[in-house]
Length: 218
Ligand code: AMP
Image 1 (cartoon, rainbow, N blue to C red):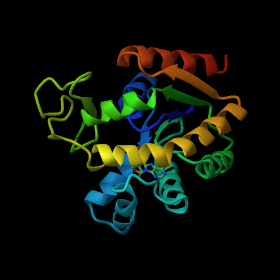
Image 2: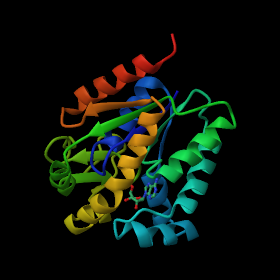
Image 3: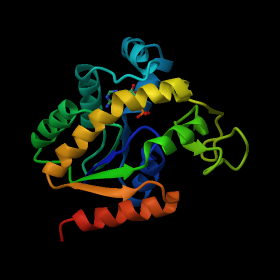
Image 4: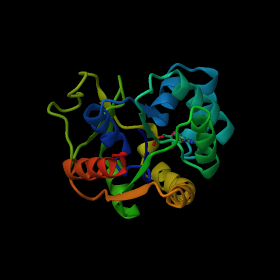
């Protein structure tokens, strides 16, 4: 099963993706984590991506499509994968369709985690991620057991550079219209399912798993 997680920045894709991966036994590919690793390593990709990410803008389609689809191909995704953060534009969605079609696959489900925009801006002020693997916490709604330390791998928790309020607003302005086009793309393909992202984390997971069951061929 190829499962795409859709949602505005802060909707909970990065929280849900690893939970679903464990429950479904398939890997996660998270474009933001991939880019942040490249930025930290100061590779050519990282230097290019950082110019856009630090302003809340999308990395150009040509760059992210090449990098992400290469990674998808290289990952052990025979039983499927969960895509977090890709595709983010219609061009990326079409490129993904074409790449999957080459091996007779397709996006089986696009799970759209819907949250009102104003709630997202508030959420992101208290979001923290771990430095080792990008595990996601929220100081208010999903705090770590020990302050400042990741429950899963023990690394330090930090605020993402692009989670400061001015950048958050820029990300919403830039990314939400593109997201809505991607939502329409999957609606047209009959694989879009929406879940209520204002619910507690467990309830959102349950809704997403229920949509997975619905979409699985019997
Ligand atoms: P995320 O961790 O998914 O919120 O991504 C962080 C930032 O990485 C985004 O705000 C974009 O600047 C960039 N990014 C991640 N995925 C993509 C994508 N599919 N297309 C373009 N830019 C992306």
